[in-house]
Image (cartoon, rainbow, N blue to C red; front, side, top):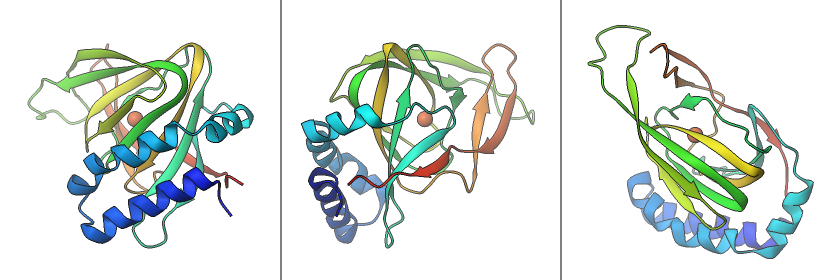
Length: 189
Ligand SMILES: [Fe+2]
């Protein structure tokens, strides 16, 4: 039996999907359930045992009918993700404890040259516990953990790993693709 707050979250998201399975409809409405999940002190307490990961996410839940997953991501102090997009999937990112910055970019080239992508930074948003961010398909971003690291709970419309996502090098303009984060099954008891 999963932790009560996680089970409640899953139940609420499944109800949203049952009403209209289009992520355009589900994602804004998922912020309420995510806010309640992030406010659960039992979940925050259990996160003290979650391992720091680099290119992996903890897999708390995968929905057998709608395919969405609930992940955990724990970063060390100052740890950064590469600049990336999530391809076609929708993501709702929630900060559970500690803090980080979400850095956003926009693409400025005409996409005519393979393996090249000119990008420029458009925002750098500090986020604290309870903060949520809807990451739309192909949105270019990176996350930088704060001085105490960060702990995030993430809902994705599909499990990463089985398809390529975009990667960007700001300095050289190189663009390439590779599979997303691998998944470590981590049932929350
Ligand atoms: Fe991301």
